[in-house]
Image 1 (tube, rainbow, N blue to C red):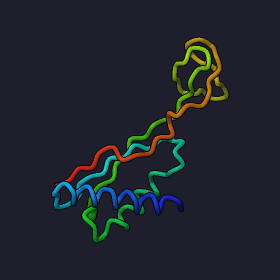
Image 2: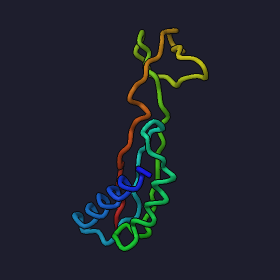
Image 3: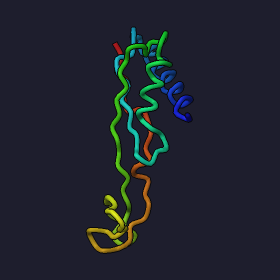
Image 4: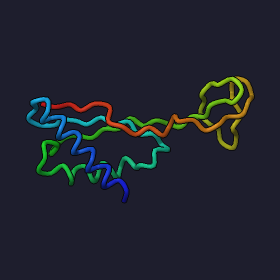
Length: 113
């Protein structure tokens, strides 16, 4: 349910962007969403269509680039995807630690007409 207020904010940002840049309507909002961001893209997508009604975003598409989480090796510093039941770095055998990769959540671009 916490996707409702964030979707309202996305529509407002896109609507404002369109107005500020002389557009007649928003065509597409491109988002980046990490698997560990805490947001569910499908829920945002559902809310977007409803909240966008009556705004410059009505009829616009909302697209997501999903970012898979990665661990950072505490020994060599490289990023890698965690393997099932293992935190071992595939490069040096060190232990992987949680990183910021996979927590992203932002508007990448807004396409207007």
